[in-house]
Length: 414
Image (cartoon, rainbow, N blue to C red; front, side):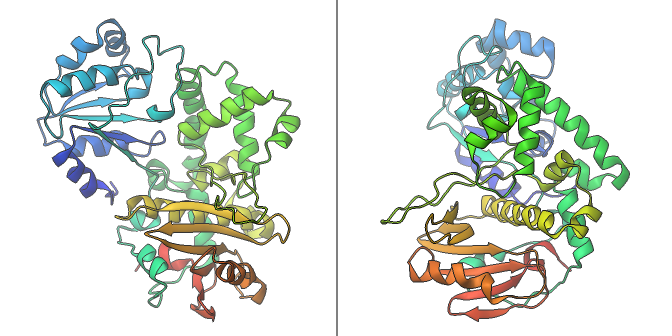
């Protein structure tokens, strides 16, 4: 079993917060890590996957929560979000840190009223809860290593890479992704896992939780988003290409984001007289999922450089996003593109007043054209410094405030 970097932080949360909410995509290990947070033999657990328990949650929510000895774990809370009101009531009667751990594959903060939620949307539990998102495994977690790359990225002071990675191995990592069970499976069994995962997620969350009546249509849209990964989302084209009504498609997208399958990268929002692209970029929580939805194999990526470029960009954005989620500091993520000059930066990470631009290239040989948008971003005050992440081995400074960084810095470990 892979150790999760976030576990010490979750334990810290339980020392001063009554309710810990661990949310994230299905099968990223939420239930497993939640059980590890409570001392062995002391966990009182219910799961709303159990139909008897789910019925009790609707018949007598307060009674069900009162019956639990704390610390207690409530799993799959998205199936009965109104239970949060009962949890809040019980917590307010005896305010103790670490009383409840709740897990869910849907973000209750964005969850609208659904057919399964006949008793309302529940309570925000403000002042009593900390929400923490659990992502698929980082490459460092898979390797059982520590990764401090974000510290170097934000300071602009880079140590020499200690490991390298071949293109073949890198592409394998991209296709496998970071879902724990996929990482542990034999290669020939990974496709079967993804097929089952997609079907069960669409059925369980989109149908049951979000009241999506046409799950097949939602799946078609999900596959379309996978085809457009790392591209700016043009909703009008999506509606037209798929012949889906605007409101329906918007509902599907919101549900896919809230279910932690799709992870849109917002546009940079500080407009200082420039005409900027304001639409988000399409991204996913896992490139293994993207590749499976598109039928992309490692050999296809090696043969098609354009295809590799888009999916490699998503891989880097996703990996850096996961590392940011695990970091002590708070990070904002954006992409940047000017309408007139077409100047664009694939990813901007901002933390504690410092903004770093990240350009992502699947090539192995440096080209001077790679850094022109980063240099413009620095000159315009959009970013403080920048890096180009690429698939080669060498690391060096290629301009004032701009570095060329091998992807091995944060995906390969001795």
